[in-house]
Length: 164
Image (cartoon, rainbow, N blue to C red; front, side):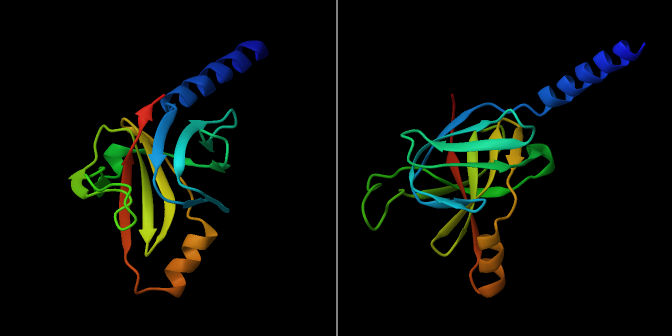
């Protein structure tokens, strides 16, 4: 009987884990950003779950930067938001216009990475893979920035991601 209960518990745990499964995403991030206590440079990144439940790895494709952080499951149906999605424009890459022209729309059913922007500082906030996502904890640097400078408004920046 004890073996049966243990086996049932393992099956239930695996079922819960699969409900919160998230795909590996690849995203080009055109600015440096903060995740946890690390600042990562602009570049191409892979964002993927780790074997530890809730742990996510954000790793630059060329290996220059990486960070691991615990994130909580998020469901898009519970967190509706209007976002500014950046799309490359004709002058993307120029010094005065590094990411192109922003367009605004509501994100639903897309694969993307969401950032909070305060002035020229970017903090990863969430990732979405369809309707499932992960929400990253607010970093110490972001908390300090919000308390020190109440005059800076938050802008939500969303970058399209591809399933890998």
